[in-house]
Image (cartoon, rainbow, N blue to C red; front, side, top):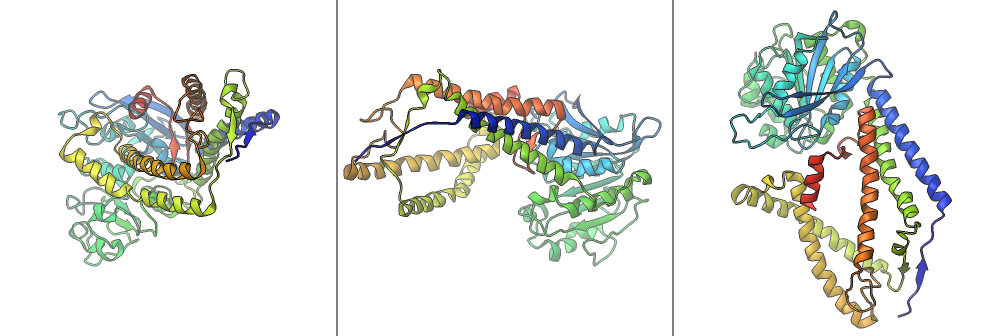
Amino acid sequence: MKRIEAPYRVDRGKAYGFLIFCLVLQIGAVILADLIQQDCGRVAVRDVGYRNYNGIALRAKLFQPPGAEAAHPVPGVVYVHGYQNNRETSDAYSLELARRGFAVLAIDAIGRGNSGLPGDPRRPDFDPTYGGKSSLAFLRNLPHVNAKSVGLMGHSLGGEIVYRLALTDPQVQAVAFSGFGYTLEATREQPKNMLMIIGRYDEFRRRMTGVRHIEKEWLFTPPSRKVFPVSNPQPATTYGDFGAGTARRVFIPPITHIRESHDRQSIAEALNWMRAALGPDPRSWIDPQKQIWPIKETATLLALIAGLAALLPLGALLLHTRFFQPLRGAVPTAYYCTWKSYFKFAALNGFLQWLYLPLIFLLFGLHVYWIKIDRAFPLMMVNGIVWWFFWINLIGFLLIGIWYKRRAAATRLTWLDLGVSFRQRGLALDLPLLGRTLLLAALLFALAYGSEHLLEKLFLVDYRFIFPFASDLTPERAWIALRYF
């Protein structure tokens, strides 16, 4: 087999230009996102921290609308995000509420974002509201908030939290939750002024409501018979009286679970609901269909893309420094994959991805019935991905060994040709080069997280698009990352 080596070359002028472009785009996108979340200076947004009743630290983003002050207090809303999210997931609802005269406290639930860890659920001081109860008290005590006109909102797990809070606190004047269904504990009077939003195609609808077809079944279930004052309630229809706290409504948009926190019509429904229940200043009201949150989400998506793209020119420039130059080497081209082989192996890899479902069920079974792995590895969603990643790579390791044995016998292919070994014969590692490679990776990692952390501290905006996001690297997250590695 003839060996051809292609030299590694980069136009450093273009690399510097692309790096500067990425950094400018990154900073500009974050500034635009911050401008939008402030409604061009009309809404004050600030980072707040306080303690939960059991001493755990809580972090939240406080939106203060125009004209809100102690002499003119405004209605307030606490928003609790869903499972494995953070406070910025709430921005779509929070921003639109604040533009219309509501003070909004969007919290990092305990165990999420930059709030503290929840601790052992078996402890007597464990907080099942994950900071929701203390956040409600914190909002009520703000001088510019009318404590007699406070509501709750949340999505998914956050929806369940605010629903249960509203059930136990008769001072909560309204509750609106999405991706969750009320239970038999609800009545025609409690919780006060309740709006339920759930997607027609919500993946978790059976878990949340016990029914498969929301539109045909939900309003005729035992919980709905307890809640509505009529025998044949209809979706998107309000029943009861806001003044008496008995208003009830179920809204079923044609969306999935993930869309419920970022859906224009759902947000418009919630805005109208809180307006009717909490009575903000009419002068602050804006047409609910005029929403600006998509601009912010687009800007933070650009920041996310630019932040990752900046690693490419930076890595290329570092590889041209004297210290990292030995890593450049040459690109071996002794082997190439044919289209036929590519599609065959891509299909096999696609099949292996479907192992995620049985493997994650096995992992959760081990966790529930054998060993509580979340004490060492607390991110259960990550646990499922890592568990799946480990097994499909173990299978891949065995398969590539079989493939290589056959290929090498026929063509004298070596591990060096595949970029696995540092020498022509056998498997050999070059520890100094591996050390420099790790250092290069650490520098690129530091740039990505350092820029995100700095910009979030300056502008209270993280990199994200709806749910894919990057939060700043706290010491606790760094320690967790090392454990998983």
